[in-house]
Image (cartoon, rainbow, N blue to C red):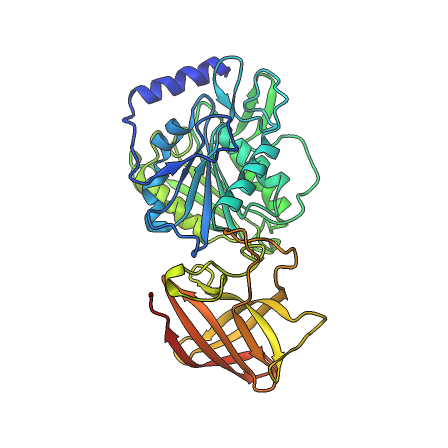
Length: 430
């Protein structure tokens, strides 16, 4: 296969696809000037909410508009409530956009461009511009973009929660294991003639097949190759029944790591051109089940609306995806500042142990905003919660969905750090 063949194929594809115009607004991050990078936001986007980030990496020879016309993920931004970004590769000497994935596809003219570093900086820029949940950064790559998605996961496993390679492949030659676990999904049609299911080479450069890619990442994630979970899916509407064989490596894996292979029996290039709506919804559902187990941001909290008239510029929130309450609390003893381990202000995460009776339990903690990071209003965030040691009373202002409340909890078990809700009051808009 040669670059001209890939380029011609993409042009034929787009001659029969009607371009989809999203109802969601899209913008560009001005500091990135490679090409038409697009960022789609939920229509009700607010810095008071934290959002997963979905990155789509285009195929060889496609720009960001063409990539969206194939995948159509913008139409799901509102329902799933995520920030959706489509960055751009660079143009090669044939005038085709590509990603330098350091693998067989598709740096045909030996460019020295460092796309891995670029994408890392691109994601950091998105995190600065929008309220992104750092535990839920997802990368979806199409063909050449699939190679790139796997390379980004390999190089920055602490950044990426899950990477999806649709008709991509992993590097052929052995390398050291990545630093931490990543959730990997490999999708491939068994009769793909562009990127071969069993592996192959492009202009003499070899690449792993889909099964070998899954096995390589199962080893990286230290997953057991026995006791595999098998299943089936219906991903191709032109093939009868549940044509896709699913293999899951989930036993004994590193924290934050797992591997799945979706092998579309008699299927073609990836998830198709365009991707069927049912398939992309299955993909989003798969992504939303994957996350890191770290903290969602540099410090806990969101900016409350000015209409609430609060003196606080930062309040805690309930993360429905995680099922956790994230906030900050200040320790006091008889009204005076109190320190524990040399710290008085803490980021905290509570898990709900009994929703019916209002019980929560401390899951983890750390020093609050130790890096003195500014919020989106370029202010140092303050701490909304207070734990009075002498009485065991924890008071806080928290966002739940789109509503803000004042809560009071009482410590009921100091050995397990469990508290019970005593009172709550909705804060009305002024």
